[in-house]
Image (cartoon, rainbow, N blue to C red):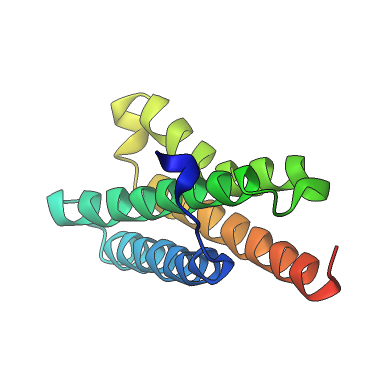
Length: 132
């Protein structure tokens, strides 16, 4: 059934912009809390989870577009760029709890995920613009 659905490439661009906004939101929340020397509360964790959900949706949309035959020349770049930011969150949750609660750990994780997402978005946009 999912093979019969057609996804317009613009949906991937829109979700990419949403990913940038959500990872930036997580970065701002974690930075403000670190600046105020406060631990990450439940609503701060929710900002991190929301960023991760956005990244997962973006990856799933990208996989569907690859399944439709779009972007096969950049296959590995798509997988690395799409799943890379999630790796930082995965590492965050693998860390011992005392390290996760450290003031700058959430900032480091969200900054890394945001910068990787910006890089992936820029590379993806250049491939689309170049017609590769």
